[in-house]
Amino acid sequence: MTNLYFEDAEIGTSCAAGAYLVTKNEIIQFAKQYDPVPRHIDEEAAARSVFGGMTASSAHTFSISILLTTGFSHDSISLQQWAGMS
View 1 (cartoon, one colour):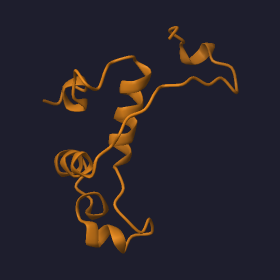
View 2 (view 1 turned 30 degrees about the horizontal axis):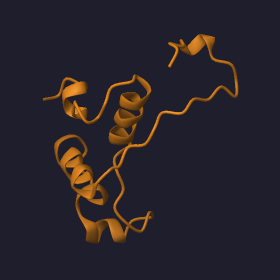
View 3 (view 1 turned 120 degrees about the horizontal axis):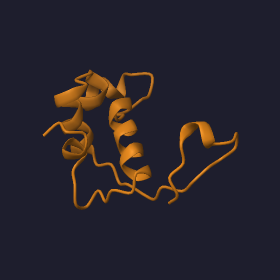
C-alpha cells in the first residue's frame, strides 16, 4: 500500500484493507477495559438496545481500521499493544 496523506486523497478514493474477524470475546474484553457500555459487554442489555444485539465499540472498530490500513498484522500484535495500551 502506498502512503497517502489525507490532503492528497481525492473524493472517491478507496483502498482494500483486508479482513479481520472480531470475536464476541474480543468485543467484551476491549469494552470492559475502554468502553464499558452495556450493549458492548452484556448480551441481554444489547438485545434491548436499538441495535438488537451486541455491538463493538466505535473505538474498537476504529482501532481495527487503523491496524488494517497501516499494514500491521493482527496475528503478530494485539490492538492494545499497537495502541500502546498494554
